Image 1 (cartoon, rainbow, N blue to C red):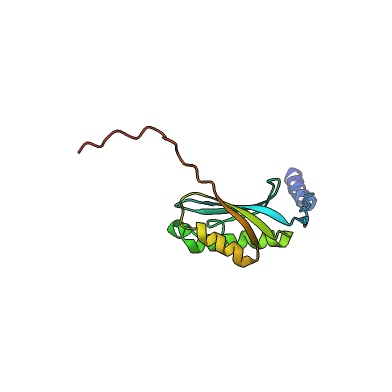
Image 2: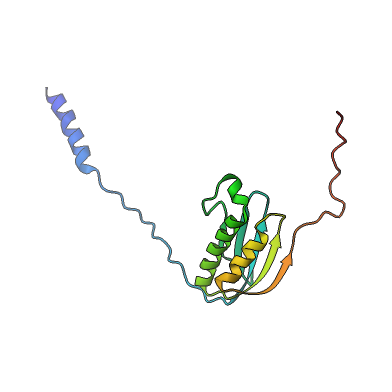
Length: 148
């Protein structure tokens, strides 16, 4: 009889001991940098468009992609999705103080021009546009001919 009472009492004590755990992690505040010029990298593939805006030394200030903005499947590769992504990345960079951009465009996707227009309409002064799409000089050996 006593043993059962002791077990019950121990369980009650455990319930009383439970303490709320508070995390010691504190969220780091975003520091507003005062950068005036930067580089916008527009990477446009057949499936997605990724826009990252960096300062002159190459540290990324803001980025966005069509997938990150909630587009899924074939809608990710549309010019509209690229426009929304560029607008988002541009808004974040504009907030940091960026005003002038040099743009590097890469890839064969459909969102290249639309992303540029979106950045321009956001209020950025675009100084130059450079196409950095990799081009094979002779490339890999092509696959053998198909036999039917």
